[in-house]
Length: 209
Image 1 (cartoon, rainbow, N blue to C red):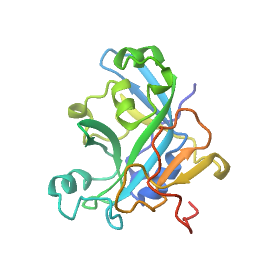
Image 2 (cartoon, one colour):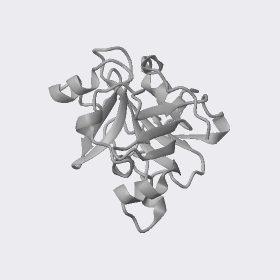
Image 3 (cartoon, rainbow, N blue to C red):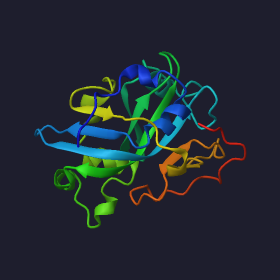
Image 4 (cartoon, rainbow, N blue to C red):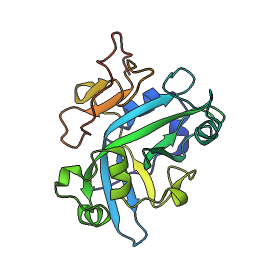
């Protein structure tokens, strides 16, 4: 596979809902500490925009999360959910809490190495969830967090947004507040999308992104 130059940080200096939509189909390229190369196509994303997101605790009553998400755009972040790390990218300008969560990957290169990092009985379970893909790629949050999204050993290759007919828009997964916001994007019909159930049916009048 011929890959293009990595996405630059300024790609992320805007509305995370638009970024989440456009990241579908991008390829996440990772080289682990053993020098093994692994790639995966992004097939599911979610946006978090604390300026208008009731599900986002940053900036309201969680100072640590606010500081974590308010860094300059285009940096890797890790969010902890039930003790598991989830990979995100910071969005908007510095000082504003916003990000995109990468929820699922379709493995392309290095499946064998991914299986060494995360042995599974059913291969589809390898990267079909946000914590699963972190473990499958062997990512170390202490090393990766707060580094630019175009670092040599972890970057995104992008050839442009997918056409609308390939994209399904839903509410996010596991959200109590803001559960009707249509901020989850998946590649329609892709078997590597996570098994998570949207918190509510797609909101009426969803933006055309």
